[in-house]
Length: 267
Image (cartoon, rainbow, N blue to C red; front, side, top):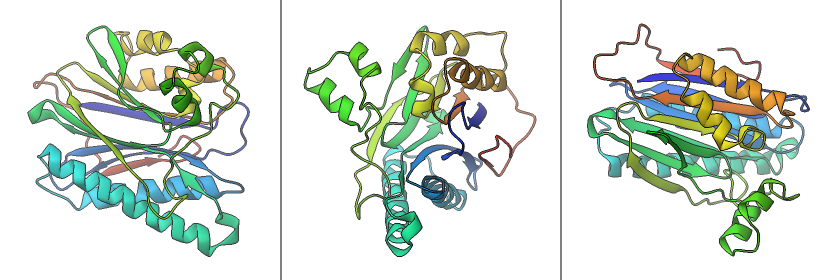
């Protein structure tokens, strides 16, 4: 499996409150993480960093994580624990009051041809299979609730003035519900984790064209997705994590214990 990630402040924002991370456990199994923080001052950045750090470092100490049900329970427990830590800090320090973050997490199980997904908020996980880009997660947002009630169309949702209001986030309340999905992850499938800074600026058809361009490396695909969002206005921070399941004979040259990409797009 090959993995690439990128985060960028965008065109209009002065601070990047997104965080992305790729961590490996004792068996070199990967977890992919992306958070989009919210809150005044530096609070959103603090919340997203706390969530990434807690879940990622907890994953590093695990081993024998090969069962989808066990991983589902683990992800739920760790995100709930991160939620409690962030909520406690937000109530402890005035400058951090009201901070929170979205989170999307993916644990690929290549031997089982599955991936376990967890999410809270309106950051998304897509999977590219054959010629289709499928959105797996459902946004926890006001606009998604309107869609569910058939009060607006998908096209209206894209331009709705309240489309960035989330109805669930990590750290804004004492408890949080975590959505879990387990889906097939087959050879040549590609996962895309992204913040709304990408999905608000880039159409799914445009993202699909980049992900299926065989002339591009996976790192170049991450770069092009972010560049396209900026070219279309870059109104928010933009973050992506891409994972492509290669055939069994593919060998990656480098292995990292963990990677966290900061707001300057550096490791």
